[in-house]
Length: 88
Image (tube, rainbow, N blue to C red; front, side, top):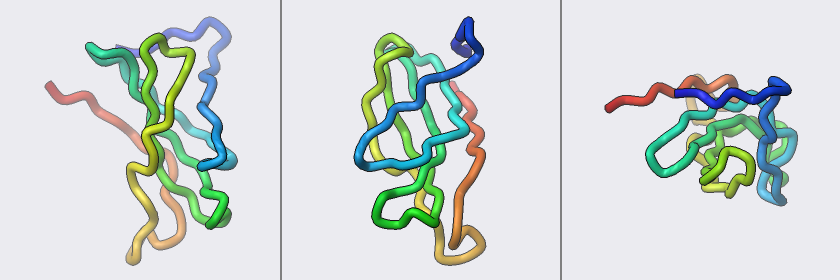
């Protein structure tokens, strides 16, 4: 299940923990909504991470923190464009 936003945009949550958030994926769950998105951290602005957030209504979001951080290895610089699948 996906959220239908009339304006075609999603308000990505902002906080002191993230900068330049982008590329959200949102999934409806029995408890509300979950979002995964890419962003930089203020302490490491040149490296993209995957963050998560949750919401009860799909409008007001609370950060859950970093879901995936760059490597070492093949992903040692950036993580972009996450895809999320709901598995029951």
